[in-house]
Image 1: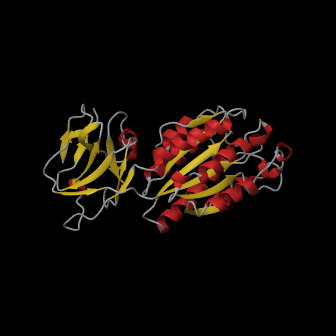
Image 2: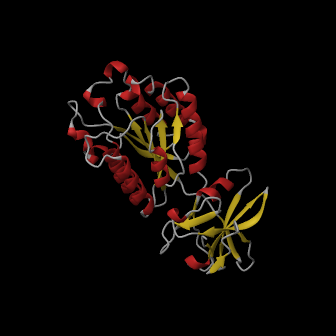
Image 3: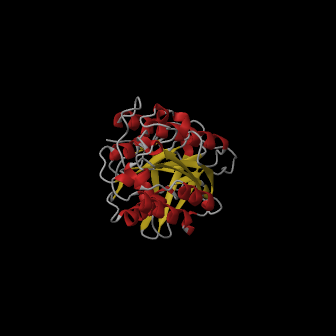
Length: 333
């Protein structure tokens, strides 16, 4: 492998590769885990603006072809302080299964309408507690089962919550939740986790970093600007998720040598350059345009690290996969 000077931000485009393919993005499947705990209505009108923004997001034309599914938490309680909310299997089936938009839009918006609740219902057992860890565990189980059955898709989980985890559930601590989120990013295929906090909630940036998505999106929790804030956050998440995961097409000789693949970037505003390879998502470095394989031993796609992904958010940007040249690898200082 060619080891590139770690002080650089990209390798110079090479000429040894004669087999070049324009990359096509991997279809995205976005699974939303939405907090329906009582504080979403008892601590100000949060539920209405949050769900209004979410329904507008679902209806937007930019998500055509994106898979979307939905689950809520807490679930399963019949009395207050019911330990049933701590059972991961409550959350391992979707309220709305993953399916492509716009066809799935009616089921998603109908589900949201069916889960509407007011402050008068906020203290009901059905809305008691914030079992974040088991809800995430069950949702990851569902999403991973889906990805196994649909290996050409890329899975992303979006957690939207307004509360700290409930002490009722064993292991439902911020640190253990971060570990769970990080474990999903490290698996094959990796699942990134985006986090939206409704109101000022500590630890959410830690969860977002563990999920490979940088930092949490925190929106107004008073209800005053919640809808506008959430709309902007969802739009940013849409931009971040769509263009940065690419299938590896078959090269001319029919086989992929992971040590001889390069990711070439061109745009109207930047000279052609080869992004640099890193081992996995956790090796992504701030300020360096890098990428990694979904599975280094048997790769089927290349995934852009955040800095490389940022470069793609411009008109006319293009990614090509070049076969035949030794992979240019980033080595941190």
